[in-house]
Image (cartoon, rainbow, N blue to C red; front, side, top):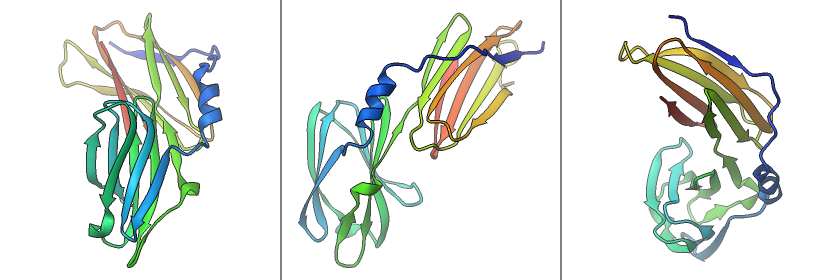
Length: 203
């Protein structure tokens, strides 16, 4: 059977939280207190239990990771002297956002540049009555690739790409995808942007 998918041409009303996100987008989320040339205290405000804090190198390789154990204010000292010279980033991943604070390590010191702080918003995928509502705040104007796959329950391991689109230069992305199939199966929606992929499986 042929599977069909189409974009419903009704415009989406951008969810109200986008407005509040826009007003907060340029606020700093992190405080750095240098103890000496290669040590720093990292202070994060309003974190939630379960948020994920990471340190990555400039290639995106994970060097350190921990789950926040308590909601509120997070404070911890980091000895960055063990890192080779280069560019790195602290990354805080929450339910809705990924916040990045780059820093540079050289021979004598570490340098944090708050002007390079970046906040990326995770997409929201909601499904109702065979319609998939996709919204994403994309203030960095990064390309966002949307792919939809279908796998028939009668044919395990037969997942096929049935829809693909890349959205460019759009701050507020809103899509409604109409998922219809005469076969019983499951859909997988994947959104890729800024080096990360977010997926949602719909049975």
